[in-house]
Image (tube, rainbow, N blue to C red; front, side, top):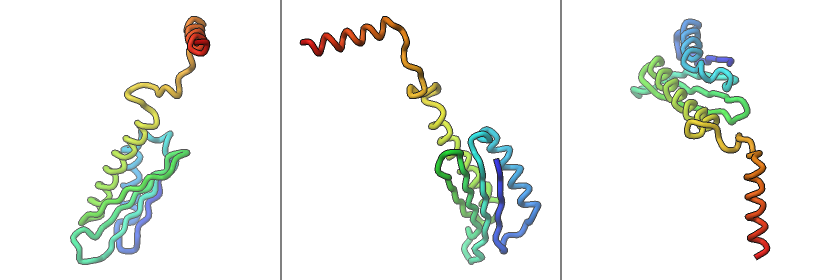
Length: 133
């Protein structure tokens, strides 16, 4: 999984901030390593007078699926990142569970067809009996 951190010219922290974000995401998203191909983090400061002018946008790209994006606004860059990371973990957990688990077991779509000859004969005889009547 590749992690890329982008900041605008108003966000201070440099390499230390990028290293922290990469390390935190690697540990918190470790269960999705085989599923995610790339994660991009965008940190920005709108520089306005509003209390929540810092923004973090995180885009995650699951293999073979459409990318998912979360956004969080906060008063500090750290809070904006923490909020967006929490939203991403929740979203990925939900999406990953839907894609790989169905009520705690495999989906019926992934199960093999029954090969019991007795079951196949019962189904065929029921079908023939209803069509002859």
